[in-house]
Every structure is written in C-alpha cells, then in structure tokens.
Amino acid sequence: MFRSRLSTARMLGVSLTALTLVACSGGAEQPILSQFFAASRLHDNTTLGGFSTVAFEPGTHGIITAFTVTNVTPEQRKPLALKTLAKAQDDARAEDAAFTKRKDEYANQAGEALERVVKAGRTGKLKGKDAEVQVGWFKLVDEGVAVARKVTDARRTLAAESAVVDLSVADPRNPVDTKKYDGELVSKDVTIDAPVKTPNGQTVQKTLVVTLQRAELKGDRPITGRWIITGIKDASGSGATPRS
Image (cartoon, rainbow, N blue to C red):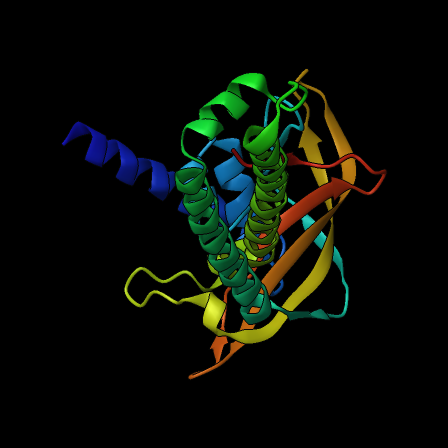
C-alpha cells in the first residue's frame, strides 16, 4: 500500500512539474519536453521508459525547471525497412538451423575419428580418414562462425531499426508486430533556451537541441505512433546520457 501511494505521489509530482513547465512556455512540443525534464529531474526511469531513450541526468547535466522553444525544424522522413530486415533475420536463422543439422550429420558419420580430430586440433598431424575428417570438420567450424555472425548481424540490425518504432507505437492493450509493417520514421529537432542549474549549484543559460522521432506505419491499418525523445545535446556539442 505504501509503495502504491508513493508511486502515485511520484507520478503526480511529475505531472504537476510538467504542467508548471508548460505554463512557463507554450507550444505544441512543450508537453513531452516538460514531462521529460521533470522525470529526468526525479530519476523516474519508469516514466522516461515510456517515451524516451535518453535522460537529462541531474548529477551530470543539471536540472531544468523552465524553458522556451526557439525553433522546430521541418520533419524529416526516412523509409523503414522492418519487413525486409525481419525476413533477412528469418532467412539467417533458417540457414543456421540447416547448417546445424548438416554439421550434426557430419559429426555422426565421422564417429570416433572426430574425437581424435578434436583432440589433435587444426594443426595436429593426422593420416588417412582422420586427416580427411580434420579438413572437413574445421571447414564446418569456420562456416559455422560465419553463419552465426550473419544471424547476429541480422538481429542487431533489425533491433536497431525497430527500437524507436516499437516504443513509438507501443500499446499494451493492442500490441503491434512492427515487423509486419512498412512505413516511415519521422524526425524533427527542437531547439530550446533554458536556465540550467548545474550539479555545482550554479545556474547557466544554455541552448539545447532535442531530437524527437515517431513511426508512421502502413499495413493492415495505418498507425501513427507518438513522439519519442531520442536525443538531446548542448548546441555546443555535448550530448545527454542514454537511458539505462
């Protein structure tokens, strides 16, 4: 019960702080930015996890309690390749499964010779059938490394492409399998001016650039995701901390 009350109070604190921030400025981008700075200030990673991949850490970057939007760039659109990348991942996994089967069959056929080959390694001097198995087995080992790398690369590429998309369209009540959709990733940069209370207690005026992205998917039904904060940096170049 205590944890429930504490969680409710904490979220209420974020909401009230966000409203205060909104009141200090104004504009279409303010609500998400206000919630972002409020949740960052409170180290509320649960709230941040719903709409941001980064955080403005108080102990590193400072605290923002008010800001003004000075510029919003035109939206930039990048085609999403989720379906293609998902197929590439499936193909790589299928290739890996076929390879594993072939490797197991070879091992069964080699029998006891394989034990001697494994013991001798690549450079051991073997003769006859053992030498043939040695060549064939380590050729398979090298092929297995290449196949495994292909699976890993396909998985990582798909994960990188879908991370923001999945967060943008996330809906626990109606889950979306984004790998079945085409679409676009929409991006825009929002420039703000803000007094930042630094970790050493000083207040300095800074210009920050915040990157917002959202997915617009096309499939059985069109889906427009919500804006996600994916980057924030000082106009001078230093960035925010990736959210852990």
